[in-house]
Length: 270
View 1 (tube, one colour):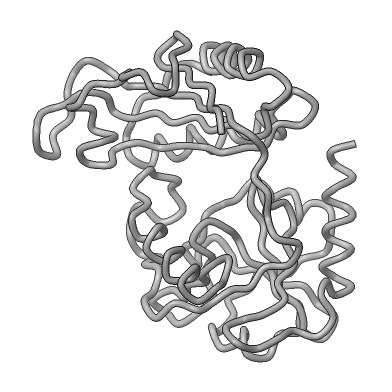
View 2 (cartoon, rainbow, N blue to C red; view 1 turned 45 degrees about the vertical axis):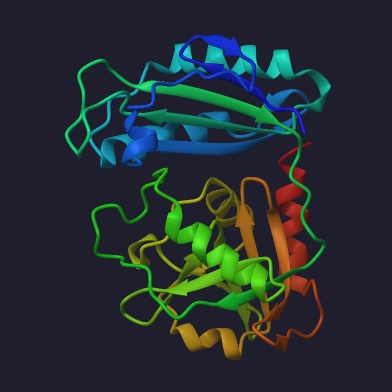
């Protein structure tokens, strides 16, 4: 699986050493990122993703390169990847720094990766996690590259033959998945947790809320044991229907509200 890589203004081979061993993205996970899919040779919802990248950077006091430079790098990477380009990731770290938490002074490192489209199962199986998201941390809702907790949760899900892991927050309310937002349907009404619950302000989440009626509300985590429908959203999943929560099968999958959300979201690509 070939990946096109652009680092600090130049295209490099994916196997070529391209960042310093002291880069704080590697040593302390100090950086932010955005992932997006590529539709007909262009990153989908790029403007929204760049806005969120800047909000994440502000959340950790990280100075980003200007948008024009980022857009030029994105275009270069997509053109170099050619017709196989299906997804794109922009990562910005605080750059090389000393051993320890203090940042260096040489400026950020910017990486752009372009690879094939992610292939997801038609229906997702999810599990519930036994540790919470902390909605009170200053990093709540910030898309940082420190993803070890998410990697662990996803590994636990894969061990149980599931596709995603869902979290409560410290208040015992539904929050999000390891790499997705979550929507539930109860008695014909579609709900999603508010951003105050500690979930990421997902771009796909935002777009779904624009095209269908959604109630943002704090929901107890045990709603997962009695909801009628559930779907996940992310920039590569789009609207991803869920067929099982832990070992509980949902009824019709996709249900009517899920199908409507998927149809209206898909129309945004037209």
